[in-house]
Length: 147
Image (cartoon, rainbow, N blue to C red; front, top):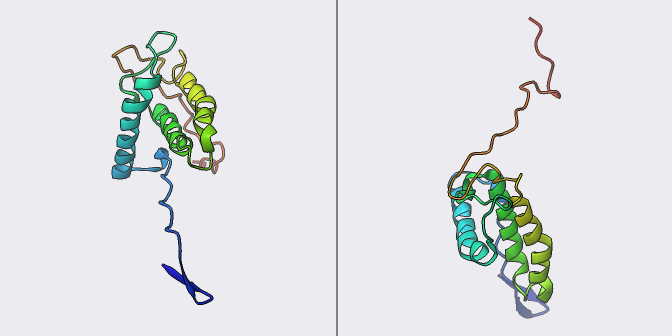
């Protein structure tokens, strides 16, 4: 788009691409595409560089994508990577150091905690997480009908 100001034409900067949505807000093909992009980053960047040995004190699931909490945390880590790994962006040359300190360490420590997301998984063996039981009664909903 060209804007006329005082007899001269100025080029308007192109609009930046829309920011990616957090993966838990996506469904269907959009979720699949986002998970594919995340998988490429996890398998080709994160794990080859930062994936430490799997032990009982630092578990990892070879099917991490089957753990929604892991997907959510890794997606957040990937989004932060995209923002902070570009030294030419607002974060500047300290962006990568900030990413390591503020995001990589805490998230990987949380994921690899012995009582964390992958606690039930063993090397090469996936076990689905048992979701905590919640009472069926909605404490904030209307009271049950009297019969």
